[in-house]
Image (cartoon, rainbow, N blue to C red; front, side, top):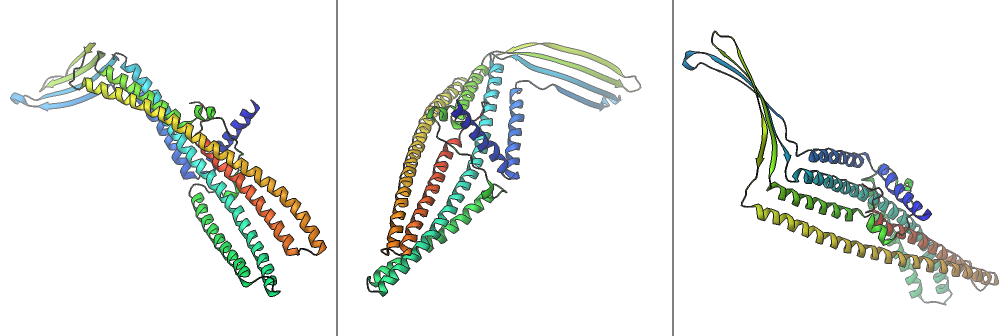
Length: 394
């Protein structure tokens, strides 16, 4: 239970704080879309209610050379009160549609936030890679000095020195490429946030179970809601070809005036109930189309479940490989600690140079950089899971 609570807090922090990191344009667009979803869903839920129609007319004519004025006001209503379940299905469809739109907007928001975190992680990883390359360049300089001394003393030929110099040049090119990539990612980051990537708080993510991944998966929930929509549309289509009972009513107010005569008023009301049963040559095909759309959506839902299970397995396997890499790196660092002690003794004995010792120390430091990068890779991999996670039931 404690582990699940920590996980939930991590995800809440991930998406709650993440929204605040987005720039005003992205935040505004998402908030407006949420408001549009709310208003359109309310409209859809009340769409079965017909409007009350009010009309007014004023006419004047001189038929038979006698002027006549007429003022006419009318209020009418034609409201279905029973549509063989159609009203019920319309409300159910509106509910499913609302949930679908909320899920779509949440997924859009999560995608932006995950993009921001992904860029942050990759930028911080590049910072480490740049430091590592600079350290390797220092090692290359030490290697060049050692090879140069051995060449001048006649212990090595020029090819060893050339190889060391070529290695340094390759490292310099790699450093330049990393800096270029860093600028590119930083520009992408600035497109979605006004913060500095260095100030972004990154919660530590841990692997979740496949069951939880599927239960709270936004894409899967979208498919389920889409199936609900298709089902209600099918039911609505069937009800459209069944009996409809409507309440009809109107109120009429007429004022007429003949030339040289006073206004005459007339008021009257009509009300009643109508029953209608439509007939269409397309009825069978319309219903069959809706049934096929439901069947198609069911197949789509099953395929989405398979895809997500496969996606989880891939992320899980990558996670295991990275964790194994982490263990190996930690073991290698321990070996370098032992090696540094040995080389220190050889330097004191005069069998090794200080450059040899510094090279070993730099190599160990480079492994520590690899360790940090692997930790970033683990978080980047886990982001793929949480991009599609829903924290609160809709």
